[in-house]
Image (cartoon, rainbow, N blue to C red; front, side, top):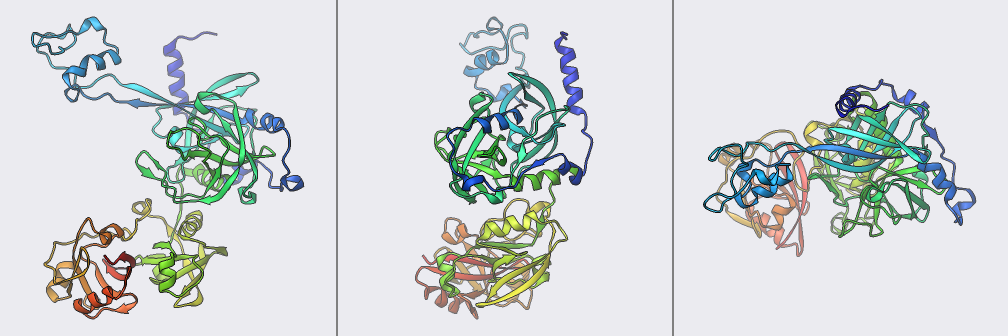
Length: 526
């Protein structure tokens, strides 16, 4: 039956506004098909993956998302370029011309001297990505960046040799992991089988499915190149990825593959393709997928209110570098070094201290700062977790009760920045002693305590000037910081602080007080 365009548009908008029936995570899990059995025969290579393709491709969808593009206002368009913009936005060539000064004039019919329109017509940016069906009634996993800000989401579902189109709604999305859960109103779909990404090994054969370069039902093959990739600096719409634990693969991934499944040699989904590392923007043999175990945790959390609840410990951490290992006289360069403990945070209440090295949490080994961040974020607020730490070379255990990650802490706190808790800095003061290049410090006087709001029990020297181009500024040192220890020694005065700093040939370890927080910084001794 044929319909006119207005009727189709009205139906599409009505469907997009409809809300899918809410279900809890137990009911949602009962809809999934799972298989965590190990690969047979030790995962020996086979000569054809046609069976894998036949198993996964009916569950792979192509997603078309439309987002509005607002054209620039006419007063922001150079006069010589306005005709091109009018052509782009549908104004016929004969509607504009040149005035007596050979300047492009407004479209005819406005009257000479009338202003250009304040706003140009709104057009749509149409993006293409992929997704994978995980329930027979239409739940689909994809990437957040595929559907974020979309005004309308259309999903093309395989139907034999053809496709059937549906309008989807967003159940929930999580920008920090780039995971989104959408739903179409359909029955009898073929869901993919969910695997266990914890069972993956480097060297396992994997296949990536999706719509690369808008070519639907495509599949490529490679191996797992690495596991647990983090700190890759992936930026989407000006926002850094918050929690990274990527599967790296050389299976070809190109634009359009985003949101599609990465499957093992049995066709089980073990990841969601999300990014490539390439100077050209095309496949260069380095692709990244989000482990499906992480994806499913996020998806289940999105079901109730469309958002993710994460555990919050309230510390700033860094990796144990060779420099830190030397300072603390430890041979094992693993764990997460605590450089800041937030005031009244779960970490402070648990007794965690600056310079503690977290080596385990909740029964899981912590081999670096990103691992600790991932484990904590995967736990629910209210969870009580034991933490194994090294303090002054001695192993001990502390217990923390996690809280909900506050809104202002959603973005990862950078090196040297205090954990969000309010408050502002004060004005500058004249320097007395140059601690290292670009950093001036002064003895704490009552006037300086009042100016920078430093409690009387805090002892040390105060930073009164930081050159914004210095290494110290790059590492996060700020005016108003009170340096209490240098290279783990108490700082009695500005003069002795300089002596302690100069005794270090390459780097200086500073322990700071900042607005109620204690933190640790390593800066270069220039």
